[in-house]
Length: 145
Image (cartoon, rainbow, N blue to C red; front, side, top):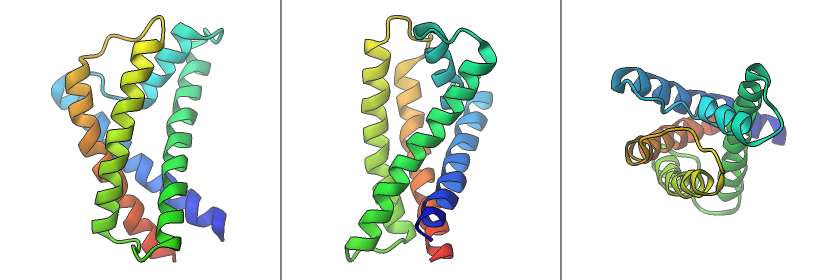
């Protein structure tokens, strides 16, 4: 049951967040697509040069990051008085958004060849994307409990 409690919210919340980023990318004519950006970072900064392999690894990395967040959320919901609710999901999503911004900022700073990215705009969309992630994580977690 523990794996289901992690896997399903990971798939739902990460997909919802990613859909938001993709839709915003299209409307803003910018690339805020986290999996594609991760794939580009992998292609430019690792021995993996195949576009298909680097993009696949970008998607895997994106969903693994989502799984890491969901694992922490699940522990919090299990061990505290905070239960899976939209309110707690938004709170955790907000914290995750700040962590995500720090991780992306650090990553783009340390990799030798980062992709071009209007960073302030990217970070500005990353925070609400994580709020969506947290909301969907809570709703999904509550449904399967």
